[in-house]
Amino acid sequence: MSESRLGTTMFNKVGGQAVIEGVMMRAPGGIATAVRRPDGSISIRKRVFRSLGERFAIFRLPVFRGAVALIETMAIGMGSLMWSAEESEGKESGEEDRISLSLILTVAVSLTVGIAFFFYLPLVLTDLTGVKDGVLYNLIDGAIRLAFLFLYIWGISLWGEMQRVLAYHGAEHKSIYNLESGKPLSVENARGFSRLHPRCGTSFLLIVMIVSVLVFLMLDRPDTFGAKMTRLAFLPLVGGLAYEFLKFSASFADSIWMKPLIAPGLFLQTMTTREPDDSQIEVALEALRAAIGDEAARPEELLSDVG
Image (cartoon, rainbow, N blue to C red; front, side):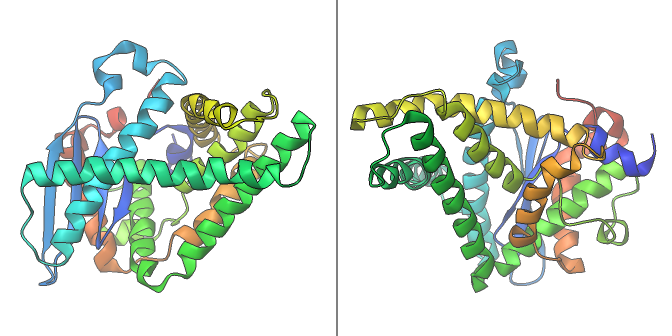
């Protein structure tokens, strides 16, 4: 398979996330986070991790796997962010129990705020329009939710303190492209790849919002607080369906008919990524090497379809 097709027709089992002054990479069996410390050295933390999908067959089924991946990714990402914050300041990592408790609280608060802002508030604002028709109500609700997402991403892109994180996000994408190309992992090779990737979490968020509109169109107008809260029960379904579309679209990203569908997600990535410098790409590659470990000698297994 040619180099230009490899990364877009295979759904990689390796993914990552930008953290503070570093990158977290996840591969089958392990998670690695690399962070640039104040003295210029790179601190790496690697942990063994087996997802629910690896342990239980039911969580490898379509839709189920997406719902599980969404929850696992949030928990892993929060933990990596907290560790990177300490390492980037040159501090010693805190007690494991303290970090675990903080992680639980952070995930709980983040979920609550995210649900309130992106799902409940749009319903409240839609109520103010006085629309009674269920279909029109849900379309307005979806439009407000999408507007909130665009404003949120736009705001992050303008936040000065986030610019280095956005650059590490670009470094993460370049490093994964480097792996998918089959070329040796190096700063020189990774530098030439795009900072926009069709499997990015930014694209996933957009797909989640669009899928939620389609799913909620099947529901009536929620007239009570309880009716609004019942929509939360559909979020795992929304996340699962969005994951399947992301997986499908990444497999056919080079197809002419797919390009218009993934273009909005790639456009949003122009706001959530920045061109990294070589030192940032180096950190991303160190995280990637640590995550894939011995699998580096068997790239075809990492690039196989997760299905």
